[in-house]
Amino acid sequence: MTYPEAIQFLYGLRWFGTKLGLEQTLRLAEMAGSPHLQLRFIHVAGTNGKGSTCAMLESIYRTAGLKVGLFTSPHLVAFSERIQVNRRPIPETDVVRLVREIQPLLHQFGSEEHPTFFEVVAVMALRYFAEQGCELVIWETGLGGRLDATNIVTPLASVITNIQYDHQKWLGETLTSIATEKAGIIKPGVPALTAAEEPEGLEVITARAQALGSALTTVTRQQAAEPFLAAVHLPLLGEHQRLNAALAAATVRQLRPLIPVADAQIKLGLESVQWAGRLQVCTRGTSQKVVLDGAHNIAGVRTLASALLQYFPGQTPTLVMGILDDKDWPEMCRLLAPLGRRLLLVPVHSDRTAQPHGLATICAQANPDAEVVECQSLQQALQNSQGDALVVIAGSLYLVGEAMEALNLSHTSPSERALNEWGSAPSHARK
Image 1 (tube, rainbow, N blue to C red):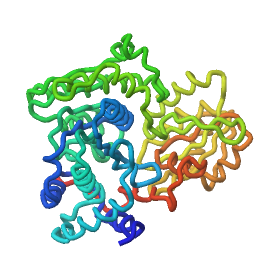
Image 2 (tube, helix red, strand yellow):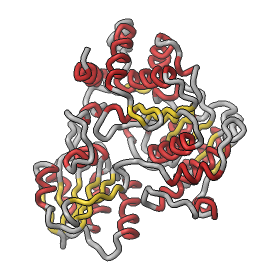
Image 3 (cartoon, helix red, strand yellow):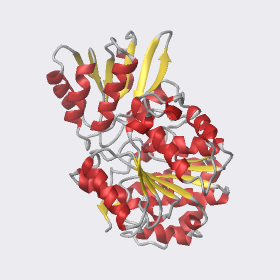
Image 4 (cartoon, one colour):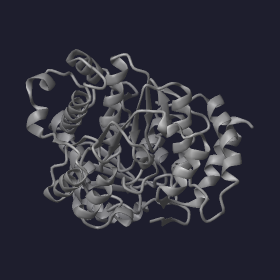
């Protein structure tokens, strides 16, 4: 088997859709040698900030000398971003080997119960982390928490970043229902931490922790401003990252009896963290500033708007926007459009893209003074904006991944972004 063949096999798993539930993941993990029982985890859920918080936790523990596995999704460009050890992406040879080893196990499942792409990749990651002798795994949920494939583990700590509206089709239409799914990662007697601020969400998390006898630590914006954290020179932009950093630091301090980490190591880990595609600023040509930010839901868009005012005061950028159709794109357009003087609307390279014409209609209503342009592709928008001083590309992590390739910020060839297409096939929930 070649690496392209392994990637094609994984891509084919998308036809099994997205099926929420733990039974098949647990069965596959047991068939693969139960690697989830051989590892220690910090399990991270939440609407926004999961990836950044995971990156911070990984950086802190790696700084402290541990061998740390990192499991996140989606990937921006390369599949190997999802599975890393000490921030080194899994080698292609190991991807091929793990696919080859897991294929015979999958033959034992019928079509209705066949594990999905995400379930297979989660078990591949578990097996790889166990083989590599990881001393700790930072383990990010894919969708929700309670029925997410990652929830087969019993972690050292359960972390919930926040509760916002996203993925309502899967998680419910209210913050209470969304919080119920996220709080499903809390385990009996395992400490839980959250930076959730919404009363409905915090109430659910608190009740779940109390019912399971789990000590709950709530991290606030006031704590994020305490002297120790205020002195940290955080490389990730945005005030929201200060709260993520406070949550990561609180988690590390909570686990000190099990894994001793000094404050100096926390500070150094936070100051050296890297996480692409989130308020990432790069230079194009001689002077053009380009800001890349996923901003894939309402809360993310509000965060981006606040950050632009903070870091680029008095500047009115050109906005390149592409959004998935299953997001609340009308409201996202209403929030983003007033920030730009030129609005270039593009399709996301996904079966689930919202069409530029629909985006343009809402944007023109939200900002009648802006120049609104429908583009056939991101490449066309980049050409159109070459003479602009500040360009912001936002609305989807898929779009950010495409932009990273177009701007030569990634060197994966050919692109593996299509592996993120978990929603393009028939899907249902296993309860």
